[in-house]
Image 1: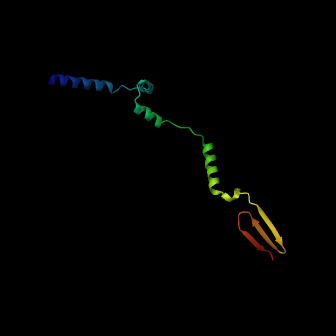
Image 2: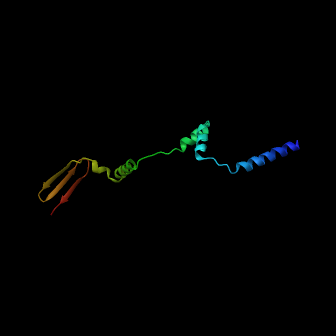
Image 3: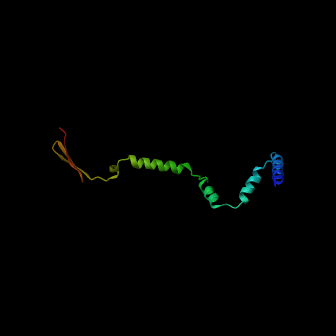
Length: 106
């Protein structure tokens, strides 16, 4: 029994020594990887590690639009109905839905 173990170890040692100088080309490695059956774990790993190409123009436009929408006051787009009434040297400005402002020019 002990002789069998020693023979196996000796053969393994000889095989490892002979195979140290052998190298695999990248084409052969790619061929081996592509021909093997993929497990669900490999499929998920490939899905999560794939590259996504996004052009930069839509991203920049989206950021600029978001910046404009958040920075511009909301009241700028409202259509205000302003009426100015002149009484002598004074003006009365009436805005619809707002307070009445009395302005004395003199």
